[in-house]
Length: 305
Image 1 (cartoon, helix red, strand yellow):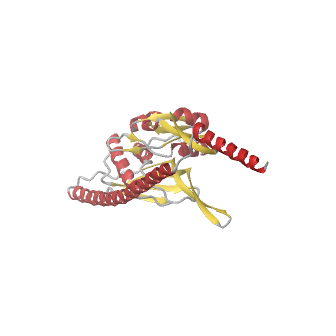
Image 2 (tube, one colour):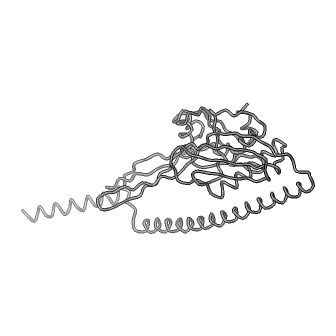
Image 3 (cartoon, helix red, strand yellow):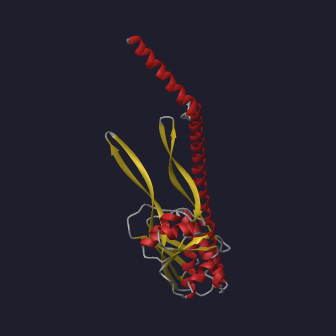
């Protein structure tokens, strides 16, 4: 009797194993794990190369910024000697702009400590002050900003001069950035469009609508380019009482991720499946702030009238 029971259990086990082999998808095998590990290693190498490229680019930008300051000083001296230096200008403008920073938290589970990194949006106060000087562009920031931000400031001044027709070789521009909350240093060109708007306002004397905020890069031709963290920035703009969020046209598509459960044999795997949606529709529906797309600084000025 005992041998018959063992035989029955053995047959049942074989049938169950055959079912899972023939009719159920198999979980990832060793070959798939090796492929995934190879992909991870490749991505890590790419990431290291990108970090090295960023450091090199920052060094180049710092060098270019120093050269710009040197030639501005030369222009000022030449114009002063020729008595052709334009009169110093005075002006001031301020506006809140969105920024994204990384927040690192330590979570302890038993003897283990795990770090979680999240991105959060915040509003920072950005102002532009123009006063008689030597054509310098100065940046005063709390928290500290990086070289990329300083490069965006120089581009903003250049575009504002072209748009207003007002030369600034006899004036200094001072950008001041402060944050209400304690946040780590942030960097990037995403405030370029906003700084250009501030400069145009300071030079022309026009008042800005503080219910509007914007984000986007700026190039020497006045074109506004894409940035990252638009969802976090939109949330910060809404929380700060803004009613209109101007977004680069190139950021019209937003990738969101939806969790989907898939079963493989006796395993349940949760995958984050990407989905592309219209940024304006998604932000207006989920955050509740009006969004408009802009492609140039002229587009921004239309909303300020």
